[in-house]
Image (cartoon, rainbow, N blue to C red):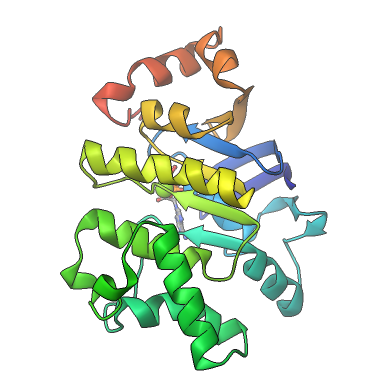
Length: 250
Ligand SMILES: Nc1ncnc2c1ncn2[C@@H]1O[C@H](COP(=O)(O)OP(=O)(O)O)[C@@H](O)[C@H]1O
Ligand SMILES: [Mg+2]
């Protein structure tokens, strides 16, 4: 469903991606493991064309993303929901308008139809519409903000959802709830999900497949058993040091 073919990405004189090959299967959740600053966010920004590779190709549903024209990119962005690292709600809009924003941008619907969709998406992420709609982002707790961000991501009914550190900055209990929600949405909506998280234990609970990014390449790909039994010392060190937070190799 999402394919990376020998993708290189250079920022200035630093080559962050050095030949990424990756095939993300449809209707499952695939996690990307890797050290902080290793290029995980860079990988998923290529999926929606927010970054162009220095060389190599990226395909979504068989459509080439790099070098695509505006119309093609718009089509891809309608299909792919992106939950950014910091939630990224608009501070000046209440929750209702935040969730309605992408719907109003992309679809011509009546007020009632938009209302119905907003209520549906908020309910889906465990928020009570009547309670949160008129609140502003600053009035919400960290966990509620992530949920509201997720409701906005779901607004266009994407078939692919990209989660960039969805539990960063949350307490363990709330992290666990968000992780469970990612799992539930996966089953209910049958989407293809890509998850980036430095929390290895949470990630094992939420994902079907795992990819390990190291030194700009995917050095291991497989299910949980493949990772737990991996002979690769980098993979072993990464999954065993998870409780100490993200490890730094540099
Ligand atoms: N737009 C950019 N311009 C320059 N450097 C960037 C840009 N985006 C990311 N980087 C650099 O690329 C490296 C990888 O970043 P990132 O993909 O965010 O890592 P991760 O998500 O794995 O923590 C970092 O050193 C970061 O500073
Ligand atoms: Mg990142």
